[in-house]
Image (tube, rainbow, N blue to C red; front, side, top):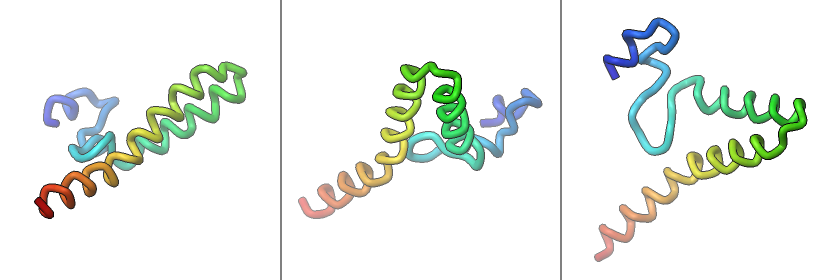
Length: 73
C-alpha cells in the first residue's frame, strides 16, 4: 500500500485491501468508464467491465458463505 502512495496520481487511500477491489473511487470509476464505453459504441468493453463489477460485488456474499460453511462444520 505504501508503494502505491508514492505515485501522486494514485493516492494510497483510494485502494484498500479487502474482498474484491475497493476504495472510495475505484468502483465508481469503473461504472463511469463502463457508461463511457457504451456511449462510444464499444459494447464489448462494457460487457467485460460489467462482468468485473459483478464479480467484485459478489465477493462479500461468497466470503460470508465460506465463513458460514466453515463455522457449521
